[in-house]
Length: 168
Image 1 (cartoon, helix red, strand yellow):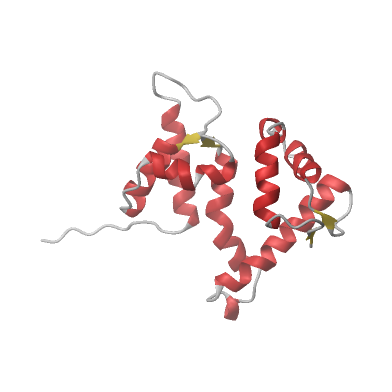
Image 2 (spheres, one colour):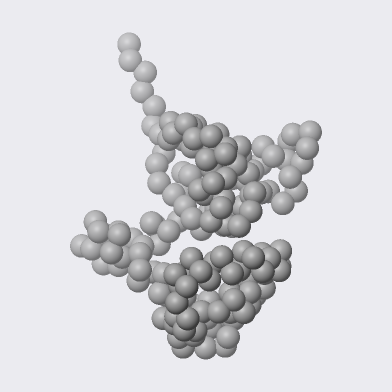
């Protein structure tokens, strides 16, 4: 007799598991009322969902470092998980096999939306620390917006140190 089971795959299944983990946070002795996900959670998720054994320290140095902190919230996590799915939605079916080439189109659409939200129009803008700050403030990320060192690091990472880089 062999046992079989279905293992859901894809962004929807990942989101369901992360929401489950977040719900579990509310049942422990120490509640995380913001539903945040930390390095330990991500490490456990990766081994549980994908069999990838990655230490919490490695998660901090890679995944969380990109988000400027020790934890990420559910909105950030869900958005990360849905990027490939959005790329599929944004293109004709015959092109979805090449997601690597599709994602820039989705990113450009999101950039236009962000620029419109922050500046009132979607015209290309010079990437500056002040613009990065305004983006974070617009979306309620006050703590990140107040971290001058992080904002400067983001600008350097995005521009390679070149002045006058335009977002377009």
